[in-house]
Image (cartoon, rainbow, N blue to C red):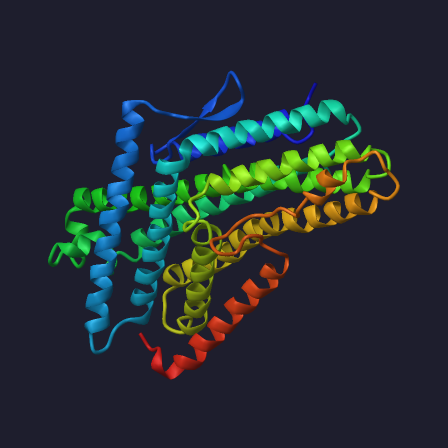
Amino acid sequence: MTSAIFNPRTLKIIQISVKLCSSLGSSPYDWDFKRNSITVHSTHRRKIAFTVGTVTSFLYSCFLFWRLVQNFSDPNPSVPVILWLLLWMFITGWGLIGYVNAYMKKEEVAALFKGVKLLAGNLEREYKAFKIAKLVWKFNKIDVFYLVLIYIAILYTVAVTLMFIVAPTKPQYLYSLIPGFGKNWENNYFLFTLFIGIEVYVKASTAWIIMATDTYTILPTLIPTAVWVEYFYGKTRSIPTSLLISNYQNFHILISYYNNAIIPLVAPILPIFCPFVICTLCAFGAIRCHGFLPIFEYVPFLVLANNGVVVLTLVLFPLTADFENSNKLCEKIRQQRKSDKKVDRKRIAGLQPFGVRLGVVQKVKKMAILLSYNFIANCIFTLLITFPQEKVTR
């Protein structure tokens, strides 16, 4: 029987994302072709590659911080340079957090994917009428979300690589450590190519581990949970209340395990804080620097600002959907208690709406989407007022 949620096309897209994320060895995950599932790649070669990616990202963060301190001490600093240093510091820091979470929770993430796939398969065999709506053409929500995130990760890597090639003489690049190399780079193509490789490796490996952290936990867990809970909400009259309670408790356990698959202090940083910072800084740079930047240095601001908004949207909607749908189903089950006297009242009294935990926030509600976008807009306007156009000239 072909699964409605994890159909062959969806599994193929997930497999492509796994192979892409593990192409540089920066992700500890791999694809198990026998079970069609995510697994932990625990060979010595992968462990070494993972360690190299982590150490390289850390050293690159130290370099960016050092350059940032130098630019802030300059009496007439370049605003675009400071913005790019801040952006790459946050993106590299985002990747480092992903490395830490992957190192500490990789087994939980792999087990979580297998558990979601198993639970979805069992429910589909029991409820044969279940179907997941197509979002675009033949692709369901999981397909579209995965494809968009793959596109964003590749676009980011291509954009920053092109920027490095067409605008090479910048202090935020690693070769600026060699005195005079930035101005005479055309005399030594080998070293220039080597530095391009290092820059691309650091940025690509960071993008892959970020994508792996989001796509192996948020998308395959939260979207199927929201879809199934919504399905049960629409079928409450045709499904016995005791069975509804059992299914509800299964998904409650699943979300609890999901919350355990991400380090609590890391959870709000990965999906919310980092995309928010990227979107805010890039939007400010796109507005204030359009008058004097060359096209190839200006376009990446627009690309990353757009990517930040898209990533925030793709992450926030699954995060909030589970609490909203579970809250509605929980209330519906409690209302049916009067009509079904055979149901144990203790089981119903024990039902509580479940949701995703982000740090001190135990359950993310839909209001978080509006608050996030409102906060981004306020920060952008604050930066624009604090730094008017006449102050941003270089």
